Amino acid sequence: MKHFSPDNFESSLIGLLVGRTNALKDRMLDKYLLPYDVTFAQFKVLIIIAQFSTDTPVELCRHLSLDSGSMTRMLDRLEQKGLVVRKRSATDRRQVRLALTEQGQALSDLLPQIGADAMNDTFAALDSEEVESLKRILTKVLVAADDHITLTRLSFNPKAKS
Image (tube, rainbow, N blue to C red):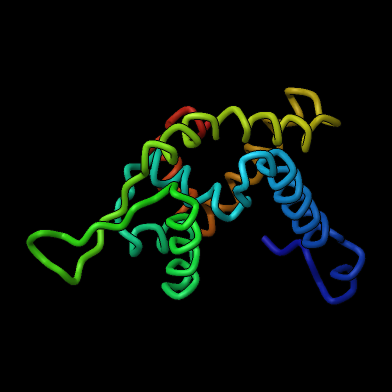
């Protein structure tokens, strides 16, 4: 179904509103993560490792839609902070496995609460029904677009579909 035309594209604002809401969410998460010396981008890596048992840089790149160079720099920073370690595979030296350090695991245990607090602030203007409607609409758009990350998350969390 076509909703946009050159005549209404500029005034529809949907792209702007979705983009600005995403930027607001990222800024809010950065604010909540500041005491932990972790950025929103690093938060995403840590939570994917913790929640999905993702243990290779290639899998992380797939989950986060990042190129390998960006992921290498991100992992370098997380390693310097003592949150992640990289280990060479004993059977294939070309392969690197990732693991959270004790400090990284302790922080990862806090991330769901930090994320929930930031999301509550981000969407404080909405009531519960509006939040569910927004989630349903965004999920419908992303599933229809065959978005790999959304489909992966839904397969891990069937409740997210409703």
